[in-house]
Length: 165
Image (cartoon, rainbow, N blue to C red; front, top):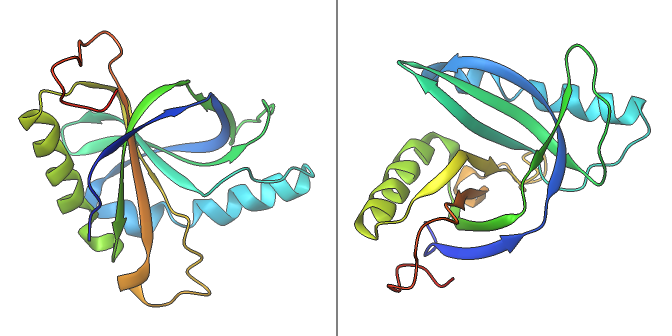
């Protein structure tokens, strides 16, 4: 199930992340294991997460894509050779909520892309998936929640009513 797209202004949000380059079919095998690594790194630094883990898809080249696997934090954090600091810039974002198994996320992204094209909506930066569901306490994949965001291109004129901005 996918919610109707909505817009939301978000303040700048810092995060720590590990960047990886993968093929789409490798995502389930390679990226989820990075999340506990980042949680452990935060614990060692005595820092608390400020939100749900995420995958930020930033660059695509052929079959390969650059993905940041990260966790939001409240303030800038100095990284190291493995984990780096980043930030989602402040601005207006398109947001949809999907409930269901992660294996269907490519279809969800396709639907969102079609909706943006149909409504002449331009976005900038990468698409990000937040994963607020604790899979240890919710084993039913039909109840897993994914929040997908993409920043609006603030240079586009939205007065035609395409988005509620």
